[in-house]
Length: 339
Image 1 (cartoon, rainbow, N blue to C red):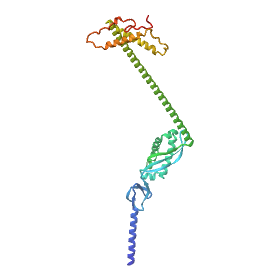
Image 2 (tube, rainbow, N blue to C red):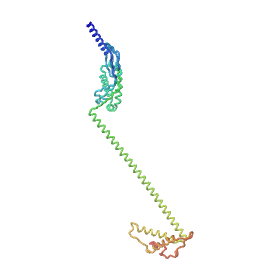
Image 3 (spheres, rainbow, N blue to C red):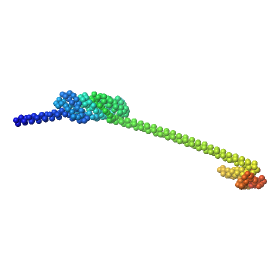
Image 4 (cartoon, rainbow, N blue to C red):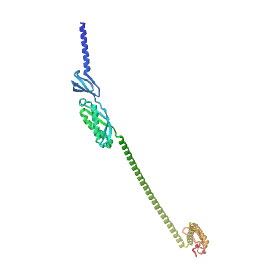
């Protein structure tokens, strides 16, 4: 009896252990960002998505465990011959994401290696169809063309290539030196052009300044000439007015006015003769009393002008004005020209 109980207990324990093993084999926990393929007797049946999943133990098994997140692959450096036979070395990176786990697991063997080799081949094709200058200046165009070709080629594999970037392009050393000399020559040419443009602009500005200065100088001369003419005109008007006043005084019988007028001109002539730079010898009139008489006549005219008279009355003529002796005060001055 005891043996039967012992055997039954062992059987129950074995059944429990078997059940636990079956449960562990049939229950699968798929992590987030992953997908597993299920094979039944070696044939693909389904894809397990993230979460707790069940399969049939001993019949179903896990085939491939794929990463569904975006991944990055390095493209190794390789030598590329451009269209103009220049040898360059280029490398890059690939960003891709698995969209269909079944295709990625069963349509291609070694997915990452196939993607890298496909990208390297297309890099040689795309870059080999360009000149070196175009290759160095159109990286965006190269990246876009590579992305289009590689993405289309990997679509049957269940991949989505999101980005391809050319990381580095290295021309040969001698070509780099030639490019450096070319760049230096180009910069020197631009500097020469800019310097010439600066000199040209400076000459233009200098000419404009001289033009403006000449215009202003001409305007100044014109203004000065206008003012000189105006001064001469006013002087002539004053001279005419003085002559008219003297003529009026003479017509009224005032002989001292003509004496003043002639004496003033006489003194001015003597002053010009005395101050002339070329005058070495000054000839005075024989009768110096003529000058004194003229000055006395001026004094009498001034005295008569400042004497107060009733309004509307005519000042009387100076005593003996009409009976002055020749050469005396109030008489016409006699100079070298008098006889």
